[in-house]
Image 1 (cartoon, helix red, strand yellow):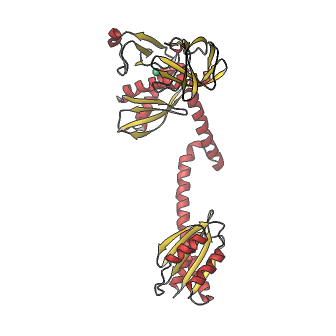
Image 2 (cartoon, helix red, strand yellow):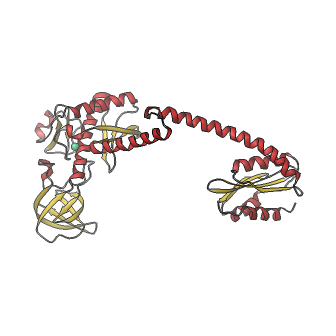
Image 3 (cartoon, helix red, strand yellow):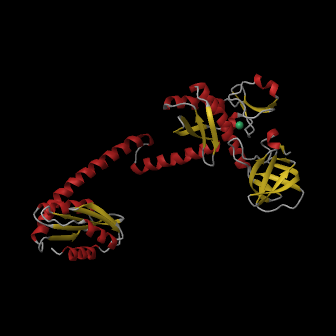
Length: 392
Ligand SMILES: [Zn+2]
């Protein structure tokens, strides 16, 4: 019904057409034309964007033999001038042709068959029928794919009748019957495909696999081609360069440096915890000496929940006490309550009451509870309320 001009010339961006039918799609007006450059969503490739007589085309969908151009608002004329958004189209051509080459490279290098393909807004994915892959074998696949790019091979399309299709060494059997559109990356890959592709492989620029994940017992690879590959390289290079600059090291030294930093942070945390415990022992002695009765309560300045816990435990080791210790971390206020074994009271019901005062949550055992609440909670007032409730 609609002549697909992108089959003959995927580089064509402007065309004139007659309106054959007017329909609606999702509550919007949609035109069927006698011919079009607009590619409709199909075969894993998204639709083109652009305009008809200056009115925005928001979606292009296939409906049997017709292509529906879904419009932002109605176009009254029966003859239209169409224009597709070239940047988006060329991006799709780069990704899609890159996919054909990458699929065949997986077959050649790892005997990996393509199970599915999806061209997304940021990156594209390729599901390959293999269970595992090493960095080395994946680099061999990328190497082969990019060799085909650098050789700047022609990409040719032709229609093949059903009785001749057996002569074409297709990578996958066609999904449709009848006349088949064959896309050939010269001498390398033959695919049955209705999408848009670049004229020569050199236009893809670069094919890069970014990562992979397991799916249905296969591996699904994310990859980028052309301008997307450049954008990815720029973004990642900026991250590495900034990291290296911040620590005044070479970019290549970043992994070793970060690993060392992580180990040092872990060791520092361990030592700090020991110091907190030692300090808590001394502090507990002072608090116990000036305690009124069996209650020890205080709010620590510029110390976190670990210090509060260490102090509370150190206090109850000094004798028969209940310790109520408040502290603040970067984003929360904290309260630790601990009691000596000889004092039989269950602290958990009290913790629930205090938690509501702090707009937070608490929990623990009958003899040790911890509460975390809003940073703005008035810890001194909470401690007074707790002391009043405890009555010891
Ligand atoms: Zn294709």
